[in-house]
Image 1 (cartoon, rainbow, N blue to C red):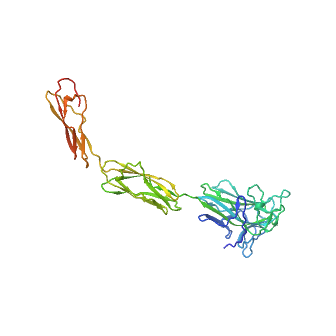
Image 2: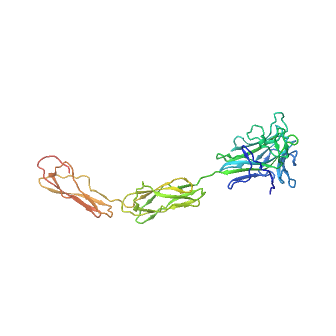
Length: 424
């Protein structure tokens, strides 16, 4: 277990102290407790807190409040401008990340202009971008011996307001006070990820070639925030079909909630655009409450009816409690009628008769097929070029109570006034 008693410094501008992490975040920690765990060095030298670029052990001999392993760079002799590369981090599904690091300078007034820590990052193998810089506080009259501080605007000049603590404390030449000798934690603002997959972070150290020019690091933490996916409620399908039968049919309609966050209630309704008669079905429009991901059903029963028409039931729903995005919020049930509509018609579309000097009768058959349950009543009317005196309509109506044929009786009367063919 790491033992820490670090001074927490509230940083202005884009940096702030971190004290905890929110539930549900993905955290990657490099704490140097295990050699080469989560990081790779470009080179190394030394093993104590001076003349070093390496992981060092402060167990039993605390440095800046830290009595375990940490990382040190001071007065380099055999390596030049070394770096630490963190193992690539899979950020698939994350919306953003923050970077935090514990830091402590070696001396309050010994960083030169050439001494710097440049922390950069790249996503998906792209160009490096600035993450966090530590620079000396520039003295217009000198290029050496000033405190180390964050450079929040990345202009190469550390800022007194963001000065680092140091093992040796005091006041720099320009009046910047380094009061603490304990590690402090520094953290970036949240950095957005745009559906990225990989994150690479590099710590580049430049300078550090003289005594007391040093920096100590620990507890590098990358915290990812997962993409927040809103709950969504939707019909499983926009349409469905049911074949009507002589018995009731259960045709429940599923509605599904995904990405559950809190209870969501929906209320179904039947659209006025439906063509089915209310007597042809029963539906339970009781509100449905989702208490977890998964489907719930709107109960629907299709009943047998006496007509011969295909019909539709259109069901809508709205969210009436809780919060969820709407997917497909209208569902159309098409009911295919099982009865075949009766048909009625003349057996033939035309017929012809030869007029004589005497009246004679003509029977014209009309046939019904696929008779249902209701009596079929037919009115008979005539039109055509024949004069009324030329014929007598004996049948003005027909009634059918089953399949079969009935005749329309028509008398053809002799015509003595003209010699033209006529139609009825």
